[in-house]
Every structure is written in structure tokens, then in C-alpha cells.
Image 1 (spheres, rainbow, N blue to C red):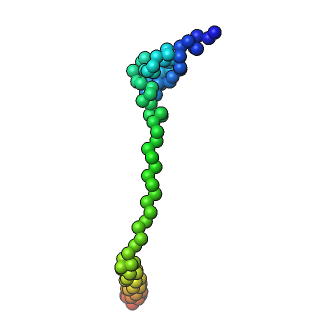
Image 2: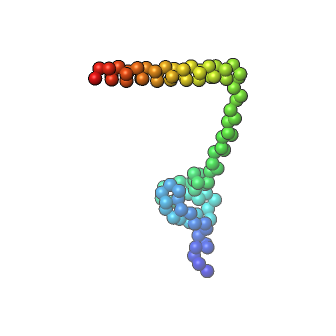
Image 3: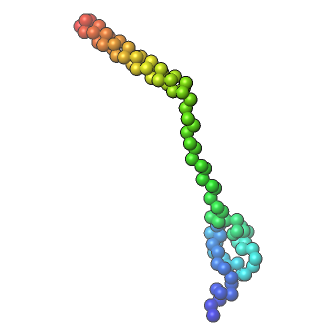
Length: 95
């Protein structure tokens, strides 16, 4: 008969990593640091995963506004291209 069978359940403390037997006591308390092994973070259930958020439908008036904004951005980008070409032409005239 081995002596470990009479000592109860073997634990490794989650707080200080000390190995000990519970000596068949109802509460497995670490003899070194006093941590209750039933409160181990590893034994806790992970928090429930948050449900994926479904994007709300965009109202039509917002869609129209976005289209107008995109058109304005495109026209603004085209205007910048013309300004850049004019500056290049001026630089060539100066040489």
C-alpha cells in the first residue's frame, strides 16, 4: 500500500505552485499561502462570447447622401489633377 493513497488528492497551488495533498479535508487549502484551490482561475468558466453584432440596415436617405459625397470627392480629385498639371507647365516656362 502506497502512502499517497492515504493522503487524499494531490494539488498544485494555482497561486504559489506548491504541491500538496489535501489530507482528505473538505477544503483544499494550500499550506504555504492559504489559497483555496476551489477558487482557481483555471476552474472558472470563461465569460460568454458576445453575440456578433448584425449591421443595421442603412436608411435610404443616408445612402443617397453617401453617393453625393463620393461624387463630390471624385470631382475634387479631378480638380487637384488639373492644378498639378498647371504647376508643372509653369515650372517648365521658368527654365
